[in-house]
Length: 122
Image (cartoon, rainbow, N blue to C red; front, side):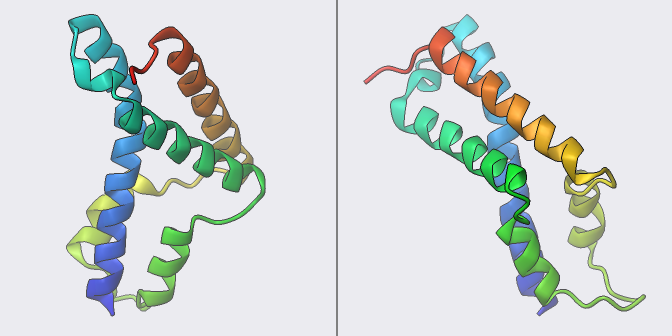
């Protein structure tokens, strides 16, 4: 089951990379004239992803990927693959839930503002 948990962790990491990296990529890409950063499908997916994360956080709902990973992961002292140790350090931080909710909401507002400032094309 640890391999399946690692696969979910990898998907989770890629999702976070898409959301967190997408916004600066849009800014840099717009400044450099990269056409793909104005792609409507990409921008809808990016905006939808952060709105989903923000809404679930504000509602106090745990991320489904985290829940699934935790259910599949051993919790004993010897548990912990390479992926769990290193990618987990990048994804999981020991902060209060309200801090994440505020950060996600602010990121969503910044993404909405970017939508207006750097408009996607049809």
